[in-house]
Length: 358
Image (cartoon, rainbow, N blue to C red):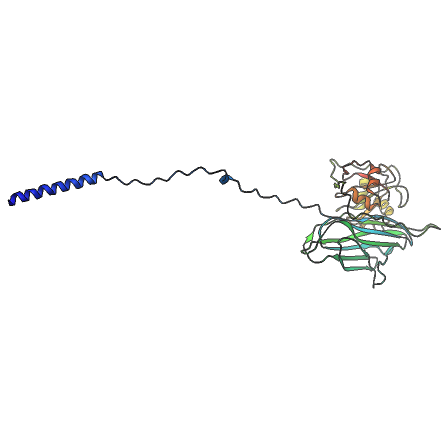
């Protein structure tokens, strides 16, 4: 009996062992999880990032010039010259210093009620307050210092008269009305580029007997150019035309004919004389310049040679426009266009000689 029980337990243990092995064999091996496929991006997901915006091109620098730029006075006669700003932008403060020879002209006081001699304020920037306004005279040198500003943070745009200078002839001769410095600042006090196109040229002659010692004032001008008309600047020619030599002998100021020319950096009257077929002495005499060696860049001189047409011409410089040239010589735009057959696009070129009537 004891032997049978032992045999039964052995058989039962073997059966349990076999059943465990079979169960283990039937268990599934673990399967590594697989990542589900990523769905393709939708159209909205493919939307491109916004392209960087291109900053707008800065406007052309404003220009400053005199209107008119050429004045012929008699002794005792007066004339008014406007300091004109063209294309001003972000203008908060305007600072101007000019020089002249007091031996030939003097500045008339615009405000006799105040001490000293002042020029008259203009219309741009407006409303504005005058910071400094004085005319001083030293040994052969007269100086105009004028500064005007708006309230802090405010700025002006457009074109107009910054200051008005009234001149009186005191002796025969002539003098440049010269830009010594011009500065423009925005509402934050930062400097703004500005271009002074050319100096003025003032000549004084003896008054004829019975002639009134006065000349017409500068004609009033609109504060902005006509909107309907383009204002292209003078463009460089290719190649630049040369000026033919003068076929006649030089003439002096107030007689005959001539071409107004703005002295460029690095030039002198000798080089200008070679350019136009005349001499430095003739240019100095025609322009009433006492010392030909002291002519600075920006000075406007009269070259005593005949222009291609008319009695007087003007040699177009960079940044000139029909508006600036017309104002500087006391003409309307229509008059300048008609005198020179300028097209409706108002295109002019550097080196072109325009007919003018100073």
